[in-house]
Image 1 (cartoon, rainbow, N blue to C red):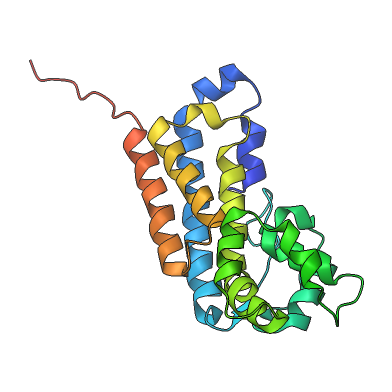
Image 2: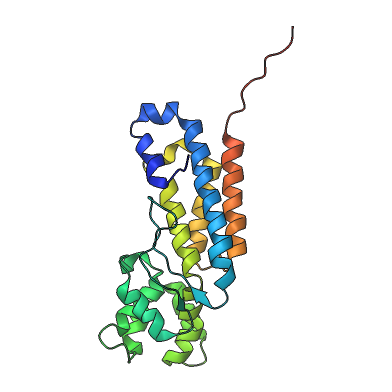
Length: 222
């Protein structure tokens, strides 16, 4: 049987059902995470050094996509066109990528630095202040390009976040939820900067889930 995120959550509608089917939920969550790992290996690893797929993932199907082709993360125009055509709310993207788009959306050919700087958070301001100059090319290479390169990783982590922080989140143990939260925070800081690291972190979550499944007591011989 093939399980999808939506199928899993349709099963667990009441607290009573969640309690009775806890182990089944764990097993099928692991199946989804294993499917993500295979997708990362097969789809993202081969193109990671140059291209971004930019798929919009949802609960129904981990391979669901509303984008027709990949784009070059070093190309300003391609990134702009991707952001402009994406059905995913721009608020769901990394903040600095959203801000870069917002500053350019009235005129994709221009960039007004004084509109960009006030939007940055403290961490981004630190990076900004360390730049050799504040022209668009320097900003793009040092602040936008590294974020765009990891966009697939970011979107997958946001999917995983939603997978765990749905209405059934309370059934997972504290250690597993802590690993998910650390993964989420790392995504916001752009710290998961390779598919291999993402796979390692997902595998940690899988191991934590498996370790939290109670082992049935073996009858002792008389």
